[in-house]
Length: 209
Image (cartoon, rainbow, N blue to C red):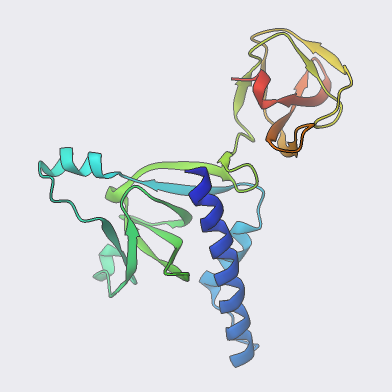
């Protein structure tokens, strides 16, 4: 899923930029509020995404193998009659969360390299998660983690200094996170900023669970 989310974010940034530029050329005073909101969302270090139910779920739910490969994105909410179909998103894919309503989510995604902002029924959604677009992994800021091993707390991400010894199974609340390359530069490592006994430092994702 990480690979596809990287592509997705790249397309969304590209499409969002071109759409905003186009609208700016037409009328500098008119800014699409939905486009502006999505632009603000994707600039954040972490933002929410929605995982759609996969085909296996719907086969079990419906009791048939004849499951559509795409889910319609609508221009209006279910309460307002759904409106027109803006496009289709693949079953089991991931979209950006924009807003929660009574029966639906407002979402953003790309269809044929075009930015689509519309509505999906909550019935289509399997999970709602925080996502870090840099690491391509779940965002852990504000969540509890444990030390997997006896580890060293570092003063900065990817540093080799022994800032403070952390015992196995020690618990922390993640204050922030950062992504660096390893010494060979061929693999990214997520670092979590935590506090232990009044000391603030960074712990590698490989030393946590």
